[in-house]
Image (cartoon, protein in one colour):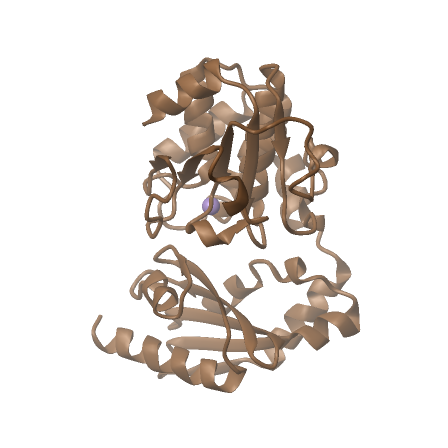
Length: 321
Ligand SMILES: [Mn+2]
């Protein structure tokens, strides 16, 4: 499949690059990395985002080129490249109107990805989707620039938790070395990702810790935030990105869960596991997806009911693990 994608990237033109709703560093990094590489090759390309651009990634090159409306590009796309998107309905903006006339190339590393594209390059071994973008560019024979390397390194750093998470191997560091090769300062990237949070993030963290419950004999750390809290302190939803990781950092805790109440019957859930429990299975039960150790759900359910469902599902998973 990678050969097929590489030859399309080499020989074809008119690419529309998209990613998932509520984009994280791997989503934005692969979106911009792929987009900038296509532009460097002289292609017609557009990077399209259905969400507001997350502040945290404003240091990334190419940010100004991003389009936010699906009718705002000046060419007819022949290929849609979907990056880091576990399920087709998580592509934003919705691409279904374009599917008749375009081929969808699905590049992703989520184990739950069903292969919804016309062409699929789904590799669960990859630490990040930016790794797969790198593999494609390498196959194409496109030389890595500082700009593209910065975007791809951002995805790798984000999805490995700064090389801290499970799944980091010697290959991860070999890839990191290749991505930095054009002359990128690693600290310049990690400083922007981990030391440039808005002050309101600290307030969100305080609220999350205030609402902390320890359940299932200390194995589950659960907390919640309310959209009204975000509004009160002027924080955007993306500022809470990975705040849930804090909930997993305690001895004895196997799973950390952060529920964000978006409205009376709509919630967003972030799940983190140390590995004993596969949280992608829990997420799938409620219509979400992700990885064994990191998963997410957006679900139409009142928060109290959702909390009970989650505690029940995680409790059962713990008994059978
Ligand atoms: Mn990813």
